[in-house]
Amino acid sequence: MKNEIKEIEKDLEFVKNIYIKLLTILPSFDITDSKILPYGLKAHTRSVSWLVEQVITQQTKFNAKKLGLDEVNFDFPDTSLHDCEIIYKGKSYFINVKIHNIEGKENKNDISAVEKLYFQYSVNKNYTLIYACFGIKFENIKISFVKDYLEVFSPQFLPIYVNPRNDKIQATYRHDKVYRTRDEFLKMLKEKSKSIILK
Image (cartoon, rainbow, N blue to C red):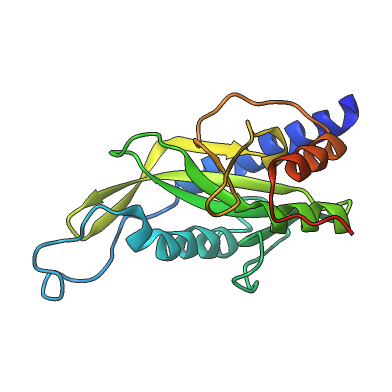
């Protein structure tokens, strides 16, 4: 049990260090030009999150050598739990990228559909997901990355609250870890979810 938790902690630390390096490289960028959006962009994270996630994953791949990585893949279906696979010394790290507007509040956010998480963790015993949440700032049509906001966490260590309306785990990106094993995690998901039907 301790070894499993230590291993996840080690992976979180490794991924965090990669993204700390990436944050020194990531450029600010304009979503469009001011002729198209003369009054700028409403500061809703959801209006830009997919695009910003693409910038992060593609820049990770583009800068793989600089970041000391062997390979980075981001060509996954929309239904996949992860947006990005980082490969280093034969080991895969599966990353789901999240975005937080640092001018907004730290509210509970939908993290993942319980059923998808439960299924993936049950079927593939070697699969562990890592969330990386980047802070962004809106300035009219410009998006810039906030260098000192980066939250890297495991769903396994989340304080679990399941939204009964959509059966998704909700949590703030900044939270206290609750250490649990994979088996404890699966048991908890099963108890809290309405959508997991036991065969």
